[in-house]
Length: 140
Image (cartoon, rainbow, N blue to C red; front, side, top):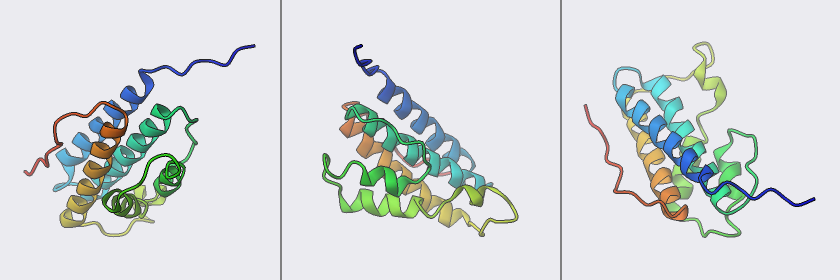
């Protein structure tokens, strides 16, 4: 029995989904900072998973972005910017999606989460060989 060859388009699909989540969060971050923040966490998570796939590793089923990055440090040197971005996004947990468990998130907080997500997505694009132009902040 032979092992399945990974689909080379899979990392690109994950990155595209990450970019969509980033854009969606940017669209609502001023008017709806709490749900926008979850979109930024999802963008970072999907970007990290794209890199994991691009490096030929299986993708863990987790939302823990710090755990995802830790699985890459043996093959890709992390940068302080990426590590700091991941640690910031790691503060967003699935519980923060629900009104009774959520902390207050201001538009300024959401802007910081947006920058963290952009940092991770750009880093992932570089490591997946799909570098695109710089992802700019869409200020309202």
